[in-house]
Length: 261
Image (cartoon, rainbow, N blue to C red; front, side):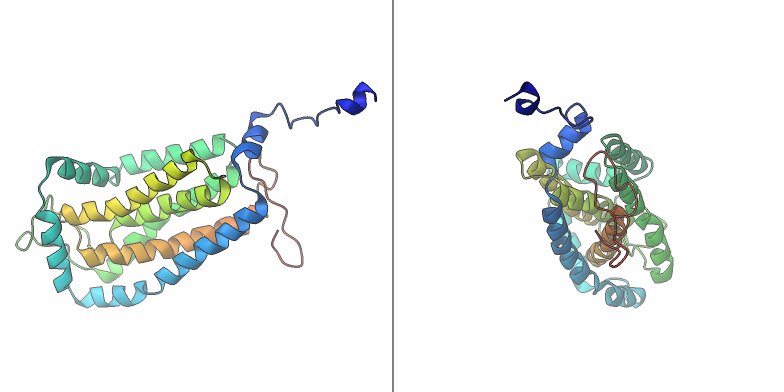
């Protein structure tokens, strides 16, 4: 057997390109990614249907008895570490740090070859603008310092929480990308846990600081799920049309018959 047969010439760009090696090492096969995407959307779509009803009720009711009960229970714990953690997590959701962190993540995704993923992550950040419109429509007052401890009184409407909305939509989409794209590994698990904890603790921090009621937070988790589902839909729609030949996790082009890969 000749050397040419025993050692076939490598296809140009497949062995020397570090992004191709990254794709082969950590990205799950395309059928697995598709199945995970469907499973993830089933959850977020089911959770979002309750939001409209809650928003309508919040427009006429300043707070519910359970809001006061839960806030006082959360604020009854005064551990120094817990207080610093709640303040620090909430701080991440304020401008300009939330804009800087979002831009950094988007640039990292684009730099490492996940071009359409970066564009879709940028789309997820639009949720904060939509949330501001919902705030104007519902116009629910924030918790009063006469009822609970309020760290700092904010002038805007309380429903929904902008902090929780941006975190749910943005970090939730990153969870989706990690869950559907990456192969199982300790690193993947750590990222999924860290992002999920950030989403959960952001809501708790807003209650602990007295800047939102429990129902404000739960409502925005539902709305965030709705925007997350829309972002995933946008991502899957564009994945087969744009950046099909991107360096990492490319998709098969959409067919004319089905419009899908």
